[in-house]
Image (cartoon, rainbow, N blue to C red; front, side, top):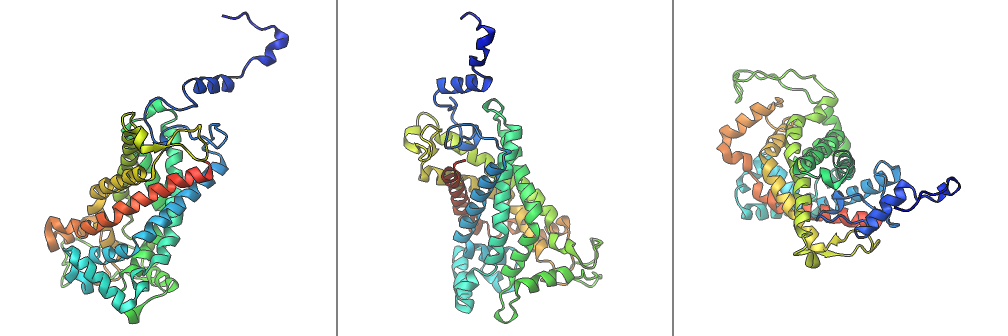
Amino acid sequence: MPPPLPSNEASLQPSGADVMQGQENATGKGQTLRPSNDASIALKSVSGQKQNKQNLDYVFRTGLAGGLAGCAAKTIVGPLDRVKILFQASNPQFAKYTGSWFGVVTAMRDINRESGLRGLFRGHSATLLRIFPYASIKFLAYEQFRSLLIPSASYETPLRRLFSGASAGVTSVFITYPLEVIRVRLAFETKHESRSTLSGICKQIYHEQPAKVSASTPLGNAVPAIPTPRTGLINFYRGFSSTLAGMLPYAGMSFLTHDTAGDWLRLPAVASYTTTANPKNPSAPPILKYWAELIAGGFAGLVSQTASYPLEVIRRRMQVGGAVGDGHRLGMAETARTVWKERGWRGFFVGLGIGYFKVVPMAAVSFYVYERGKVFLGV
C-alpha cells in the first residue's frame, strides 16, 4: 500500500471515474467477460466513453436509427402486408384465396392486374407515416427501459429483458395507434372506383356511428352492444385493447429472443465466426456479422409472431368493424367468439403462413438496420 499523498498533492489523486475506467481497461477495453449483445452493455461513443442514455443526443440518434429500421423493414414486405390484412379481415373479394400459398400469389397477381404496383402498396404511405415514429419510439423506449431495469450485466435476466421489450412496445403503440387504424382501412379497400384519400379515410373514421344491433341481425342478441360515443377520436382506437394484449407477448418476446440469440452467437466457441470489429470504434465490443444479425432478428420475428398472432387476428377484425357488416363495434370477447364460430381454432391462425413469410424478413431487416444504424451514428 503506497503512503498517502500529502495534502498539497491531493489534486493528483485519480478520480473515481478514472479508477473505473482503469478497471475497465484492465478487463479488456471495457468489454464485459460474458457474451452479450450490443444493447446488453453500457454503450460507448466513438471516443470509447460510456454514454448517458438520457442525453438528448443519444435519444435522437437511437430514435433516428429505429425509425429508419422500421421504414426499411416495412417497405420490403409491403405487398405481403397488404394481402395479409385482406385475409385477416375476411375481405369478401379475397376470401376464396385464403388457406394456401398459391392463394397468396394469386391475390397479389389480381391486385397487380387491377391496380398495378401501386395497388400492392396501397396504404403504404400511411404505413411509413406510422412506422417511423412507431419504430423510433419503440427502439429508444427499449433502450431507456433497459437502462432503468438493467443498469449493469449483473441485472441481466430474461424476465427483465421481456418486461423492457413489452413496455417499449406498449409505449410506442399507444402513441401511434390512430395511424395504424388509418393504414389498415386504406389497405382493406380493394374496389378501384371507391378509393379513398388519406383525408377522406380520416373523416370517415371520425364520423362513423355504431349501428344498433337488433335480434334479427346475424349477431343476434347474445351479447349486448358496447356503449360507445357516436363520433370522435375514440373511433381511431378500435381494437386498441387487443393491440395492448398482443403487444405484450410480441414486443416482449421479440426483444428477448433477439438479445438471447445475440448472446448465443457471441459465445466464445462461435464468436470468431459470427462477430467482427466495430468499424467506427475498434476498441468497442465486437458486433455481429451481417448474416448473424439477420439470423438473430429473423428468429426473434418467428417466435414473437407465433406468440401473438391470435390476438393480432382479433385486432384486425375489430379495426375494420366500421368497414364491413352493420358497423357494430365488437369487443375482444365477441370478436373471438365470432372468429371461432366461423372457422374454429384455425380461424385464429388465418394468414399465419403469410405472417411468417412477412415477419421473419421484416424483423431481420429491422434489427439489422437498427444495429448498423447505431454503429454508423456512433451510439
